[in-house]
Every structure is written in structure tokens, then in C-alpha cells.
Figure 1 (cartoon, rainbow over the protein chains, first blue to last red):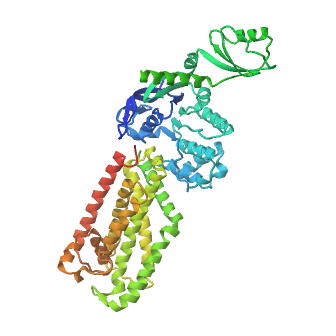
Figure 2 (figure 1 turned 30 degrees about the horizontal axis):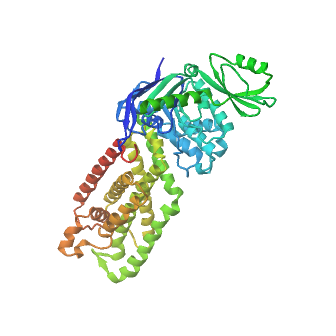
Figure 3 (figure 1 turned 60 degrees about the horizontal axis):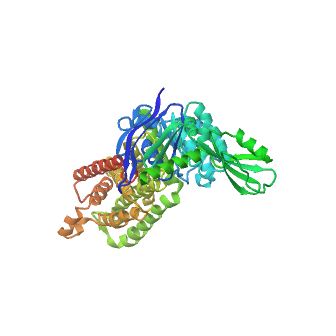
Length: 310
Length: 257
């Protein structure tokens, strides 16, 4: 299988002495939908900045589809599309001009650039806004404009740095569908996000970066299996007078008809429901207290922090 | 990138730059036209008629080449410094940095964009000057070559200023405190032959003097300086500033972290 992105022993020390990356290594395979997660300031944006030539590395090797950014930078860039975290287009330019101009930077002739711009602006629901100045767009439209701009040269690897930040849930889900579609069509995607539900539902592989080091790099399913306890919220039909006794489960009450239960993976949910039924409690609905990946993420980052402090 | 792709990328940057300054023509093309018309009326007509001849020509004829050159210099410089700094400030320079466009094409695109504005303003001022004097071009090749080279040189200067600039104040310092005094003292309004010999020597340290006089030579056929030396100096400065601007782009000064 072809490696879409290879990072070896990448280090970055900023001018003020801050060591943002402490020698990270990472591989993303062609066709993958890869999540790069980490708390604020962990080194995600620095990593992606180096890959996309916006940040100079201190040392290490980066190659995109086999093209080393030190020796074959133009070829590496040709394979790469970047959707940054901050809006970085000229707000006084028209939507269509922004996308067509970007295509020109990749050597795409105007007629073909206009055709491609129309295709992506239509797909992202921006074609009606093509003659508007970019500053007149809503936040969600601006994000979609950056995606259209990044796709106009049809890159093999698309990097999305928090593409759905500040986007409402309906729009976020339509963006997920779009990203899934282009990934299925063959575009490798690397995503950073603070919405862990987004990473869990979209991505097949994951790396978690914290304080400039990779603390986890694995398959999403394998990572989620590491979660040995999940916390569920249960809505009970009738008010319970006192907290029911459920052997093997840690249980808390939120109010007179809502329970919060820690369920060890070994115990499973069937036993929990049997216990509740024997005590005459009928469950009307159930949900996870938090996203599974979120629980793992928090525990891994906390563990890393404790190790560093120790 | 092959030659065709490089050409498309270059044309894209130049077209974007030209569209930028023509879109805001009220800020970019109109003010120099008004200012230079006032110069023609006040210095050329009203005061010039009392001054009499300068270098064997009536005063209006004498100052027209200098005023055209002054417009070219300030507008070439001003276009690139404000456009490239704006691009940095709004971070849309990242659109170029993530693309495979080589540094020299980025530089060439911005410089030709800036030179285009300088030459367009120069052309407008030349047309306006025809309302005040009959312009006879003595040496067409020298006139055109020197004005193009000067526009390129000051576009490069504007680019370097923009790379170093961190605030909007930084893009105003050089034009206000260096470029304007050097232009006014660069023989636009007078022949340095009028100065005492010491000040003639000092004036010869001013590079703008050579550009103004070369251009005046192209139009009127008179100059205070040696034209061959002036050309060598302009080309030398272009090579020097061009190399330095490329070095800044390569190292990412002011544009990459």
C-alpha cells in the first residue's frame, strides 16, 4: 500500500525556545481517513503547518506520496490540499475568484479552473454565492469555501485543520457526508478536530499528540476497545425513592428519575437491565454520558500529564 | 512545474494584482492624476512662467519627465508594499505558500503587478501633461527602458519593505521619510547644475537622480549625469534587491513561522 504521508523524527523548536514537536513519527496510508487529535497547543497545527510548508521544521523528514519536502517540495505540494483552522482568504475577493485563482497557482488554465470551481462550489452549496465578496458569507459558508479552494486542484491528500469549528450541527453533518464521499472516491484525508464524535464516526485510524509527542497511534476500533468502562445515563419511568443497589456497577443518581451508571466492559448491559427489572425499575431511555473516544482521549491525556509531572 | 504551469501561475498572480488596483481605482489611479495635475498647474504654469528656462527648456517641459518618473516610483513601490503586506496581514499569502509556485514566480508576479500600476499611472500622467505642453520624445528606447526598469526596481523595494513590515506604520515609514525626500531632491524640479559643487556631489549619491535624469534624457535629450552609468546602476540595484528578495522568500522571513 502507498504511504500518503510519512513523518520521521520531526522536531520543531520555535524562536522563543518552545519545543513544539519532540521528534514525532507518523505514517498515513493512501485512502485513509485519519484523525490527528490532541489538546490545544499539543503540536497538531505545527505538524500540519510543516507538512503544508507554512512552518519551517527544525529537523526530521516529511514526505507526501514519496516526495520529500526537502528535495521535491513542488511535487509534494501538488499532492496536497490544505483547509486551515483560520479563515485565510482575501475577504474582499469574490467567492468564484478565490477558487479560480487558487487553481491558477497549481498551473490549471482558467477555463478548466472555472469548470472545477463550479463543480466544487455546487457540491458545497456555494454556487449561488459565487459573485458575493467572501466577507459577506456566514461562518459555515466560509469554511465550505476553504474546502472548495483546497479541492480545486484535486489533491490526493487533503488536510483539514478543525474544518467544522463553529459550524452548526446540520451543516456539520452535511460536511461529514461530503468528506466521506470524497474519501470513498480515493482522497486520503487527515482531520484534526475538537469534536471527538466527528473523529470517531469518520476516521479509521488515529494519532493522539500531546506536549509534542505522539501518545497513541492506532486503529480507531482497537483504541475504542481499550475503553474498559463506559458511563451511561438512564431515564427511569417512575421516580425511585432511594438509590437501587446494583452489584458490580458504580451507580449515582442525578435526580429522582435519572441514574448515572459506570458499566465495566466485562459486565455488559444485560446484567444491568436484569438488576433494574428485578427492582421494579423500567428504563425509558439510555445514552452515553460522553462520547467513547472523548472518555479515552481525556484518560490518555491525563495519564500523559501525570507521567510528565512524575 | 513545467514552463506552461509556471506561466499560468505567473499570469494568475499578475492578473490578481492588476485587478486589485483597478478595482480600487479611486484610491490607486485617481489621486496621482489629481496631484500631478496640480503640480502642472502650480509649478509648471503659475510659478514656471516666472522661472523661465531650465536646462535650455521652458520650466513646464523640464519638470514633466521628473513628475512622470515621480509617479512611477511612488506607485510601483506603494502597490507592492501595500498589496504584499495586506496579503501577509490577512494570511492569504498561505494560499501561495501551500501551492507549488516557486519563490521566483511569486516575486516576479508581485513585481510585475506593481510595475504595471506604476506604468499605468505614468501613462495617465503623461496624457495629462499633454494638456500643458507638447511632449517630444528624443529617444524612445531609452525612455521606455528606463521607466520600465525603474518601475521594476521600486516594486522590488516595496516587496522587501512589505516582508519586513509588521504593522501598517512600517509600510509608511520608507515612502514618507526616505522615498519622498530622495525624489524631491532627485532633480525633479531643478537641474543639479544650479547647486554649489558640494551639494552637486551630495546629490550624486541619490540613486533617484540617475533615474529621473535618464528619463529626462530620453524625452528632452538633456541630462545632468552619464546615461550609461545610470543604466548600469539601475540594473545593478535590480539584481541586488531581486537577489535579496528571493533570499527572504526562501528563508520565509516574515511569512513562515
